[in-house]
Image 1 (cartoon, rainbow, N blue to C red):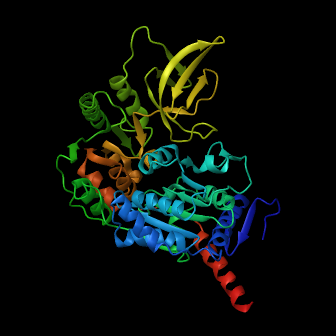
Image 2: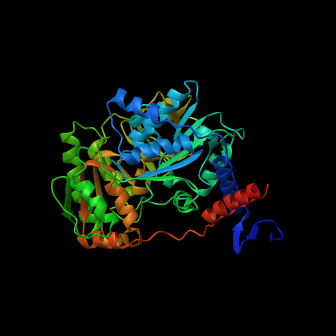
Image 3: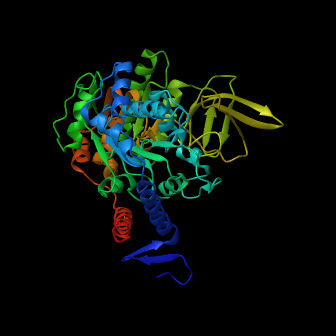
Length: 466
């Protein structure tokens, strides 16, 4: 049934906006279409043994299954927490594909700029954002699709897939050509996507696709307190262990937490010779609190990049920027992606207008004119949601009872697993306990997994009766 003006759809007992219905149905149909391709299975046992010998790396049993699944199935899923060997598996998948066909076109992609950069650094292979790879630009929910032709890649590996919403999944799956292999990689225990759906979880739960769960920790610090506590958080265990690598500093109010975070930040940045990339402050909240990212950014900026006489500043809307500021892009365009972090390298007058120049790395330098809308924010402190897909040597997190509904297990777990070497909580143990106990996942009214199974079973039935 369709509403008289076409805006609402009633189907299988559920009401949808037309856009949501088309995305859910389209994504399910496209994913099953890819998975039902025949003649795709290839035995890679010999090649895999050879590559392990050449690289002097022995994969564990589950890692080997993950690699083999890719070449025995058109669509496969790999999930596991940080340090569980996902990156090593991706490297081996690439190596096997290149051994099978040196002319194969391989695409590595991720949903945000931070995740793309991390994927490229870890694999030492070029990576794009999903938006860039399929020609999507614009803000979430309002993207413009510039290329509706199938992408040419023979193997697509999409990382951090728990961050992908229904609309983006539909566009990606629909863009993949027949004959291509698709590998979805992610951590099912992290925060769900900001946009609609719980795509990664429902694909796993559908039971249609082979899923490999990587659960052995491979990092040298694998037995560190950070790793141990991440496991405890996921298992609803309150007895976290605190030591030099996983610290707790008490604070009872947002103002007190802010003061203590500033003190820690000043000390750590100085000890690391001013490297802002090695110390990241996160918060579950953005605004309405002194311990949110908006307020923290202003005070941390004055520590890392204080106002200097004779150096220009530029104001756009509510925000003021200085040369040397650490900033984050919050909107996709042709050159930089939502989540990319850069440095302000110049503020100057050009054609009678003030201009700010930002270096995002990889040769990507953008100029922003004073009258333009700037999709930028300071990035000395970022939300836990924005931090997904990244890792830092050290991370700092306020945890206070006043955060209320943002005290959730998956948010806390995501924050903890951003840190490689040290993690510091500033706040209250009551807030920590509340977050661990709150296994709340926002309700997503979706039938995506059901549609996958229904379409898959219908095709199997047709094949039986043919």
